[in-house]
Image 1 (tube, rainbow, N blue to C red):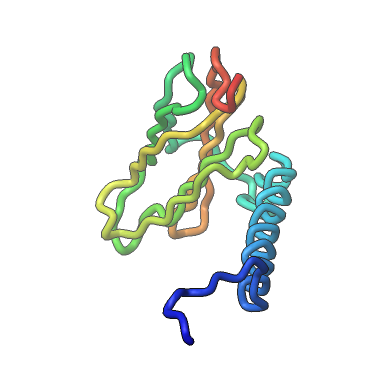
Image 2: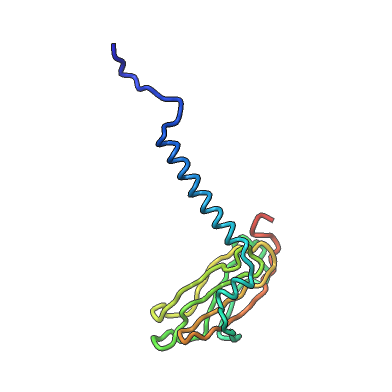
Length: 158
């Protein structure tokens, strides 16, 4: 006599074990990568952005609150006073924060079709720190600006 009941196994199949191990490997790799990025320091991030070049101050403006009551979401607008023509334009704007575990907060790539050298974002700041914007123009010149933002409530739960 045969039964039409479905039989359930109590143990995991080989396929389930391998799929679970693969998923754990991917999770471990991604968290390890995040940990490695979080250990970087500001000087190394700035060196990566600037290379051997010496940036000039000016042309870049940082619009952000002087005091961020909640560091979890700090609005920032970066503007570069430069033409956006095929002959001369802003090609990249990098935003760094000197007190973040991963100092390179954002990198924006622009081209003449961007129309305007202005970007806006929101960032998380855990404590009072400087934010630095570096703009690279099509002629490879670098321009920078720095602004201190005071954080009263940390963006990372404090």
